[in-house]
Image 1 (cartoon, rainbow, N blue to C red):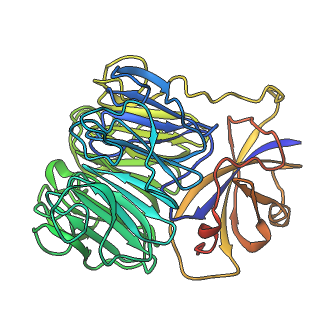
Image 2 (cartoon, rainbow, N blue to C red; image 1 turned 90 degrees about the vertical axis):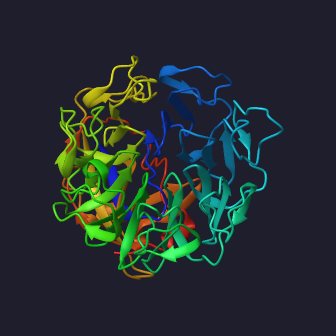
Length: 471
């Protein structure tokens, strides 16, 4: 019996979820957070580690008191957010300079505590402020609001999560340093906050404290916010970008700001994007990663420190299923569960045990991915990307993301019908594969030999996501 790694390419409105380890390092961050295969969280980098100290760690350390994690959001200033599977949010490092709902006087929150006022949350994001998306499609924000980052029609800071005015049916969120992006179920993109560099994408260079529509965008399936720019991926795999153009980060070969979306014509078949303070990353369907923008610390991963105005391929990365950007460092997750980092490492934010920056990707240490002892060296695993169509809804198209599952199959030439007989488990809920039509199947070897049961999925679809599956 072959041990197979089954990777569904599925539509999802969450920030990417994966089994093994997923790293999210949002713009502005000198600290990195990762979700491990057991749904605990590890951190590394500067002193917002959540382990009760203000230490700097050059290798991943466990954040205590957290389990059943499905998403994280990190930024340089203020608090870090952790989303749990029950829809609640935990936070840490809300200090005397931050506007956290957990702040008590001038005390610093060095270890995770729950944000008691939040329930039914399905996505989190961080800029200079905090953003959460609830299961009902509403968006809630708190924190700094000088440029209207909270979307409440005023510029008053808030310690308490408040609903963004007039915004419903949201399926994805992303935060820039001083602005916020939201993707609605109709494929349109909305933004609010600082707009002086054109990052709101509405044709103006002005701030807005209420949501405004990003011009000219339809059929969008994924969004990413940087500092200060926005990125949208359409269902056809094209990439559209706007905002600050310094150092070539818009990928158009120029360095001028733009206040309406432009296409990065050199990129096709894109399934995910990430943006930091100085650069942008793009993940292609074939598992390669491309980068543009500032490269002073090697954050583009092309083996140089030259800025790139046109996206270049990151060296040595294949089989990538997730990407993320920090302030000026980058991360990529491979389909074998290994996490790779490159760029600035002054505070140990790459997690490789030293503070030297790297111009090419290096494997991160000690992420707790243990192989199953029952597997032998002769057993091979295969990655099986599958495109699924929800036969019960069939409502248009959204982008694909990768989710990994393990199960036993007799051969590498198993039929679509054999795959279709499986079921996906999400937090104790079984979702039958019979609800979907398999559109594409292909195999390639990888080095993962973990297999404990017919299906042992760490992260898959919630019931609300199932209702939005599209092809």
